[in-house]
Image (cartoon, rainbow, N blue to C red; front, side, top):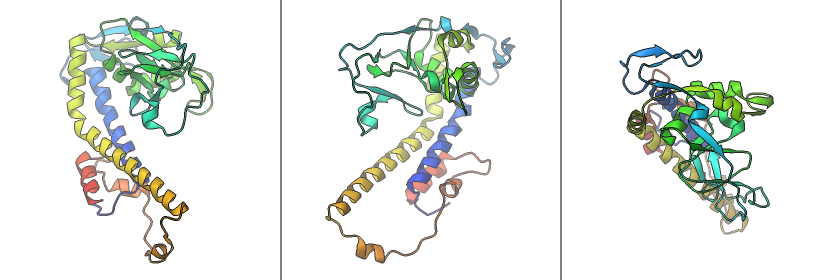
Length: 288
């Protein structure tokens, strides 16, 4: 166990590793359920493979329907999609002003709807909303139309196999892993996924919340520490620039320290299997 404090870049590395650790747990739960002994059946969909015997195969167009409600005033709060945070208030996550000159014409989102970033669907930027507000006109907003828990649909659509299929079905002029590829409604709607009964969807979400609670707590703690470091740096720079703090004498006394890369620091929190252990991650935080 390292006794060295974790720097900001290394904290972000640990967060990335923790979020990656969560993916196979979520994928297993939303594609096979919580019972590993459940009987399986062939889905008939090559990329999907076997699914629980009592689950139903459904096309996405029978689960969600697009709605297009636009703001006429632009006075509603602006929302933003973040990879690991979901749909959030823009003002709480960004200090810069919105790039758009006006929010008139932006799409209205309400709690219980699903928002899809068409260009990032293959990367899992699809979330159920718990907020009311506005999103970019380039996003797609959907109402659930089946007996489905929208939070479960969000987890399902962000699971590895589904994300990969979203990426394969995205079309357009693209370069690299995303480029300008978009997932259009006709291709999204035609994709078949396996859906458990509504009661089991809620059980799976509850089971995931319990299984991932320690990982999520560690991620939240690291994110808060990064934010505090960022705030401290901003205040420190302001004090130096305005002359409130003279650091020349203190800087001259600083010892030469070895440079540790973020990867090396994060590796201290890996167990023998190469999977980050959240208990160890919390331990190195206590050492910081």
